[in-house]
Amino acid sequence: GENVEQHPSTLSVQEGDSAVIKCTYSDSASNYFPWYKQELGKRPQLIIDIRSNVGEKKDQRIAVTLNKTAKHFSLHITETQPEDSAVYFCAANVEIRNQFYFGTGTSLTVIP
Amino acid sequence: ETGVTQSPTHLIKTRGQQVTLRCSSQSGHNTVSWYQQALGQGPQFIFQYYREEENGRGNFPPRFSGLQFPNYSSELNVNALELDDSALYLCASSLGSFDQETQYFGPGTRLLVL
Image (cartoon, rainbow over all chains, first blue to last red; front, side):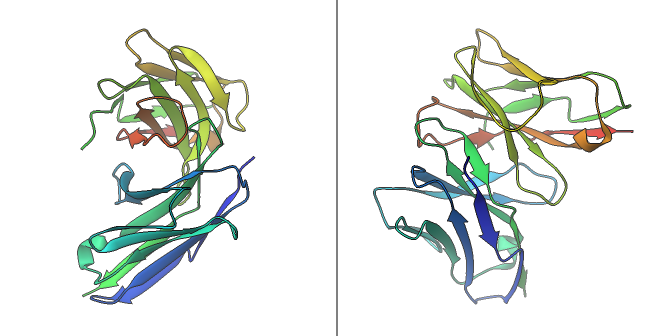
């Protein structure tokens, strides 16, 4: 089955700096890669996703890149703000079926 | 916030008991996936229901079972509870079970097994 690895497990940045979280996946047939933000005690919220037919997608301060050859994808947050502090999860789907396998999460702290 | 709801919000059970968790999918969504999230971990896929049929299963034992109803709401049943079953149980609904469909999560049910 699919195996998703996520790094780093914790990340602290100064407000205004950039944050990068990286994930690798094992199943070359995976073709959809969402990122979720989970605040303490709350549900995971989709923040951005990328499909396998594109290499990069951007939404304001958030961007995701995908390298299918290397089987890795990354989340980039620019101009970080304290409200970006949360746990971020990457996920990869299983071919054809929409079943997600998640990374272990990155706890991001933005220091004011 | 999504239209996905779950009940109850919290639950305490003892080892060996059985539990039923419920999920109402977002309007128009016919697919529900269930995940177990242990403390400090990412969600782990349990199984998925598509139009009332099980549509795939993760690495969970048969004592984890489910149902989906004609209105696409769903139940997760866990028999013979073990201490390690303590976790946040999340359901997520999507428009279909085809690949690349966005999944929207409910708020979760926090289960504690004593």
